[in-house]
Amino acid sequence: MRAESGNTSRRILCVFPRYTKSFGTFQNSYPLMDGVAAFMPPQGLLVIAAYLPEDWSVRFIDENIRAATPADFEWADAVFVSGMHIQRQQMTDICRRAHDYDLPVAIGGPSVSACPDHYPNFDYLHVGELGDATDQLIARLAHDVTRPPRQIVFTTEDRLDMTLFPIPAYELAECSKYLLGSVQYSSGCPYQCEFCDIPGLYGRNPRLKTPEQIITELDRMVECGVRGSVYFVDDNFIGNRKAALDLLPHLVEWQKRTGFQLQLACEATLNIAKRPEILSLMREAYFCTIFCGIETPDPTALKAMHKDHNMMVPILEGVRTISSYGIEVVSGIILGLDTDTPETGEFLMQFIEQSQIPLLTINLLQALPKTPLWDRLEREGRLVHDDNRESNVDFLLPHDQVVTMWKDCMARAYEPESLLKRYEYQIENAYATRLHPRTPQRASKANIKRGMIMLRNIIWQIGIRGDYKLAFWKFALKRLIRGDIENLLLVMVVAHHLIIYARDASRGQANASNYSIRLREASVPAE
Ligand code: SF4
Image (tube, rainbow, N blue to C red; front, side, top):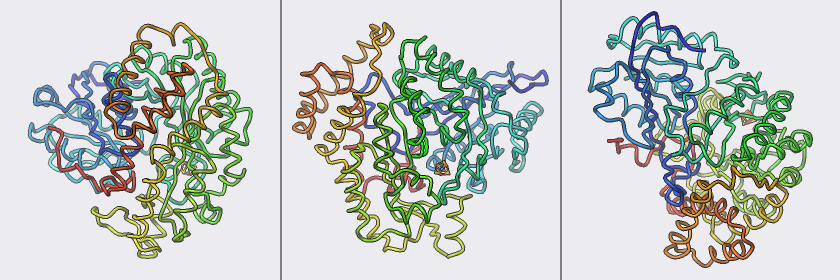
């Protein structure tokens, strides 16, 4: 579905801001690949671009790939920006540059929806999801593209049914330059973990697209050059279990039809381990990774944060069950919880050893607006509003002790030899039980060329010029002897990023929270 233009013609410049380098954006992997320059195509802005009236012209720029130029701003009648909290300063910078050309600038997306008062310089705020606010913004621009004398806020009261969402305008993005493709089937989550803003922002009753929409989107992504993997960005893929079961057979069929070109990944609660019928279909659909917010192995802490659903099966048993379907578990971990003690870091290291999970995003607790955690800490006077601090939470343990614990865990978890050992375990256990599709699409000339380029880069940059050569060759030789090039490439592209990032983290050169707006390079504008 698209908006009406009322017989007008406008040129809209959609600009996605740069990410601050972070654990989750894998920037250290890009030099090992073949022209990858950014993480994932931004769903929200591309959906808005596709929703704009048919006779309006749209230009999309992801500043992670290239900065918007004076020619782009001169071309435009108005500028749209969207992003997350960690991109706040970059969004404000885009607004400043657009104002140099006297262009009206609208901002939408999760950050402004949660914190409208962080964006006083923008002309239009779009608060909430695609819906009546979007129509009002478009009607306003159709009527008048001069900058309004003061800020106007449009708030979505009536969200567009997700079955009416247009296919994101992938054709406007340089899809082959992204590490992953992304797709969204549902929005919202039925749980209410204390620290999470998803239920507050997107509701507890997951809203859904149709399986047919997802299949059309996947086809379009492949046409537009997405390669490797596609990530379901749904907050909880099994937030509505029946819907997941409806979709999965379509994904299995799609994979068979298109030759299993893409690995799939998603986020889901750990209690997916209790659903063999879902896991079995996920295996058939070539899901290879699930991100589970394990948060902490401590049952008291899970109870305190209202994440009891993580205890529906013992955590280690849950991880092993998921792995037995060929799916690697990636885990979110939080340090700085009220239940933490000086021994928490040691317990976490034991958990990593026992679970053999290679990739864990270890974050310091950060209170996000519109969460029960924010409300509680505000009541207790424990919110610290200082952008130069690692977290806005006044921890019960001394702040420096928590930060030191985080640095120590990062250094130890991503020490090259122990990380590659955990990957070795995954290859022998989880990856070995995956489908191993041999199709012409997977063995295409383009894929082989891509693999050769990656292999050359990995051997040159890590095996010859790198500083963890010994651990690398110990891991790589086994793979090469077995002719297992695919797993060598898949593992090293991720592992290299983790090793380099963790070194920066342990030296205090990386943010301890992926949600922190403490931006180490935010003062460097995109141009
Ligand atoms: S299960 Fe995940 S998405 Fe749902 S409320 Fe908890 S943390 Fe948020």
